[in-house]
Length: 107
DNA sequence: CCCCTGACTGTCG
DNA sequence: CCGACAGCCAGGG
Image 1 (cartoon, rainbow, N blue to C red):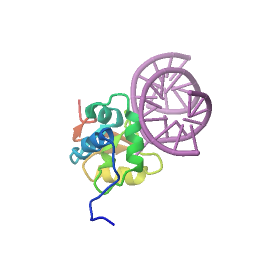
Image 2: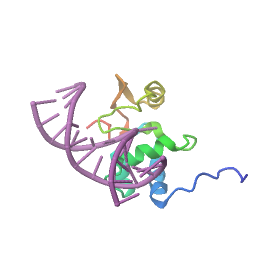
Image 3: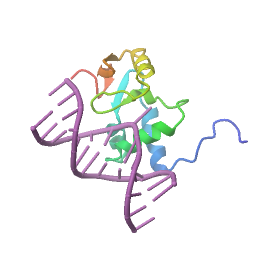
Image 4: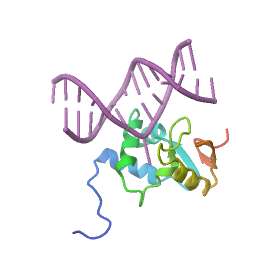
């Protein structure tokens, strides 16, 4: 087997999306659509979710990405909420209300 | 090439 | 505010 750090051969597009997600800082919450748009692929919000679903969370802060309405990952809301709260994000009823930084920060 | 699925999104009642 | 619906787009069978 190869050395450590080798991951699946992501396409340039997926690579770009992953890069954007990795650039998110603690307490910075954004949306699937925003990630897709920032990556340069508007309209691929669903693809972002599919990518996170199949990617390893070892180096990907998947918890900092939620739906446009603030909904957390279905089936994993408890863990998701815990991770967000540990970064200072206000989560209520399985949904992000306010985050220190990002799309859900105070307006 | 056709059909179905999905960690999405905006609109409508 | 929330559920139902339709639109959108890539991936897999």
